[in-house]
Image (cartoon, rainbow, N blue to C red; front, side, top):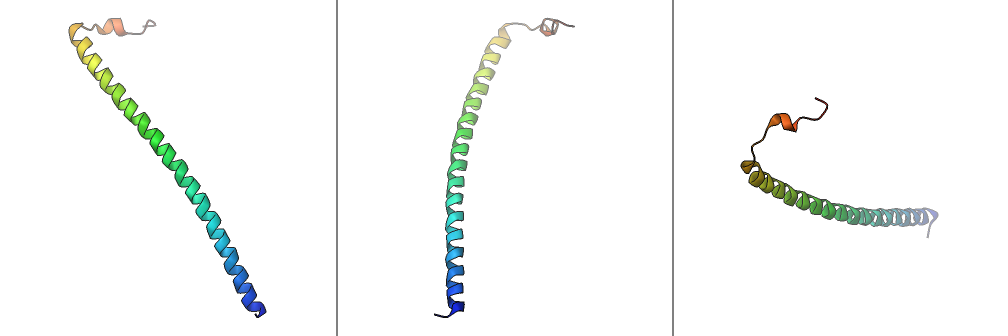
Length: 77
C-alpha cells in the first residue's frame, strides 16, 4: 500500500473514532436531558395540583368569611 493510502486510512479511522466519541457524548446528554424533562414534568404536575387545591380552598373559605383589607396590611403600616 502506498504512503498516501496509509494516510487516508489513518485519517478515516481517526475521523470514525471522533464520530463514535461524539455519538457517545450525545447519547449521554440525551439521557440527562430526558431525566431533567421527566423531573420538570413531575414538578409541573405537582404545582398544578397545588394550585387547584389553593383555588378550591380559597373559593370555599373566602366566600364564608368577609375580608377586611385593613386587617391584611403588614404591621409596619
